[in-house]
Each structure stands twice: as C-alpha cells, then as structure tokens.
Image 1: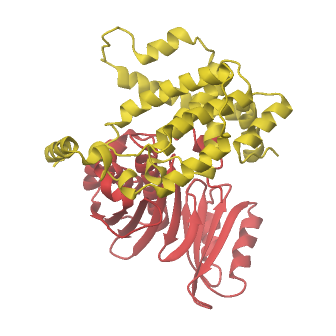
Image 2: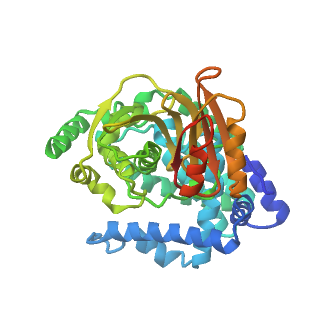
Image 3: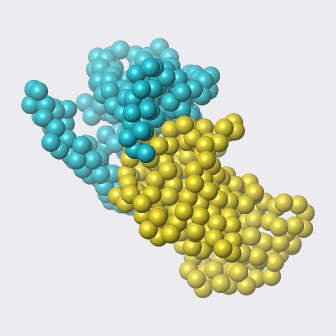
Length: 237
Length: 221
C-alpha cells in the first residue's frame, strides 16, 4: 500500500521507486480504491476536459489587444502531450493532497494563502516535473511559491469570486512559473516544504475571520468595494 | 483525521462554479439533506453561518443549497436557476444569516419540513467540494456525503446493531465506516453506516422491519 502524509514522504517514495510524483499519485489511487490504471487516468482526463470547456466558454467573444490570450500562450509554447498534461494534474494533486490533510485549501478556513497560495504552489511543483526536474526540485518550487503567498488574506469584494480573485489567480500562475525556473536552476528553499505548510496553517489559524472570505475586511471593506456591493445587489433584488 | 482521501478530492469536482466550497460543497450538503428527509419537501429553512452567511449571494450558495435539495448534482447547469425551479415545484425556502460563532467557517443548518415530518441537518463545507454532515436531528456524527450511506434510527437495545450488520452481510454489502450515537442509555440512537454500494428497496425494507429499528434513511452515492 502506498502511503504518504508529507511532502518529504512523497519525494522519498518517488526517488525510491525512481518514478515521477504523478506516478506515485496514480498508484496510490489504484491501491486505495482498487481501480485499474485506465479508470484512474480516464477520470483525470474527464476533469481536464471539464476545465478546458470552462476556459473555452470563458474566452468566447473575448478579444485580446495583442491577439494572444493566456490559453494561446500555453498552447503555443509548451506543446505537451495529453498524457503529460494529465501527469501535471496528478503531480499537483499529490501536493494538494498533502496540504489539504495537513492544513487547509479554502479561503474561508485559511485565507487566500490556503486557496490561491496552495494552488500556485501545487502548479509550481508540477511545472518542474513537466520540465523534467527531480522530485526534490518540485518540492523546492512548491516551497518557494508557498512562502511568497504566506499571509495573503481572502477579501473578495461583495463576496463574489471576482475582485481581486481573478487577478490573484493570474499572479499565482506566474509565481508558479518563476519558482519552477528557480528550482530548475538549482535554487533551494531553506525551509522544507512540510514546515512551510505548517507555517501556512499557523498563519491561517491566527488570521482574523474578517480576512477569511467573509467580505468584511481588506479590499472588501474599502469605500469603492462597498459602493460596488450596493450597486450589484440593488440590481439583483 | 485525514478527510481528503483521493486525488479527485483535490483536482475536482466537476462543477458549476464559482466556488468548490461555497457552491459545489453546498450542493452536496443540500443533496444529503434531501436523501435523508425521505419525502417531498415543502419548506426549507436554511441557517447560514460564518463565511456562508457573509458571502452566500455572491457565491450562489443559496442557489446551490436549493439545487441540492432538488436533487441536482454539482455539475448540473440547472443550479443557476434553482431558486426559480424551486418555486415551480412548490418548494418554499428562507435563508437566515446566523451570527453565532461556529467551529468551521462554512457551516449550514438545513431544516426540511412538510405536513407530516420535519428534519434537521448540520453540514460543513471543507474546501474543494469536500463536505461533512456533522449533525442529524441533534445527533452528532461525521458523514462525508461522498459514499452511499444509511442512517438507521433505532432504540438503544442490545442486538439492534448486530441485526443491521447481519442483513448487510447477507446481501454482501461492505461497510466502509460506521458510527453509533445515542441520546442516553436505552433511548433513541442513530447508526450511521457508509457503504461501498447503494442498497436497494428490498434491503431497506428488511432493515426497517427489524425489532428496535425506527427509521432507515439513505444517501445515494
């Protein structure tokens, strides 16, 4: 049975078996739920399709000034196979699995550091693996991103998931790429990934509820945000 | 205790947005309430706590909860119109923003009512669409809503638990998790059993017919 609770255990397993982190996640899923490899991979393929369809819907009718959207950039530059894209999600999922069980992954429980922060750190680890980095380098990229997201509050204007969430997601994605580049170049995080997750958890616990997705503090409590809130909900009712 | 078991608890769920915790999780809690109520719902009184109370309009949590009570899945496009659809089928509802402090930020108490019965459930949304049912009719429990499950209300007498597990064994139904709670010695008690498969009507009837069993409700997975 494949068991990992920490990033350290996850990296050790991948190194010992000499496989990608994605492979450890796939094998664990097969083990725990008695599924065939095909069933596990197909399910992830379905999830990826849902995400792609959502992006397509969101981009419909959107014109970019440069003529290039973020989605085009990914398509033109990375040129990855479907299998590699699925592995990306399994690797992200493996790191996310650790964070979710050791700390939290929702803005309401731990602030934006737990939500966009965790997602960006997961992506950083997966980018490293996609670029043929080592499991250890994935863990370093994960830590570098997470460290830079620590303390980020969740303060959505009018309680919607738009301002500042959309831009914070974009910034999270860019941090993932920069962290991955650093890790691939040999930059290491002095604080190990599991301790960074522990720090994120402690900070999230100490964060006031006003800054955890209640739309009571931070940007959500600015005069402009309050005005927007009134305008939006006056229109709806 | 680890509550995230699968990579698909992290990469997923397939859902109508915007939020896995405030929308998809809310659908799941609403759906669990509907299954456990075991009858047609006329009125839903919904108390929202913490972040749910403050941001439910912006996240569509109200639509999501009602969609769940209507029996929709997390990826059903009808979630968007759930409030209007509820009116069409004669389901009335009220949302109450509660100010009581709660342990988990995304907590909801759902009361379902019709002419003959009422039912109460407390659910929490933990992120990534993962939920837990923490209370049913005042009984404390931990139910994930991710697996088929049965809730058996019974009298706290010896043999009641064995009778239930024996029937499940006879039909070769495996138990994943089981929890028993009681109000007091010899009083009303609740068995919560997570299963690897759904039970059909025959099994349900046989369970209900046992001595000391008051009611059997199921969550279809």
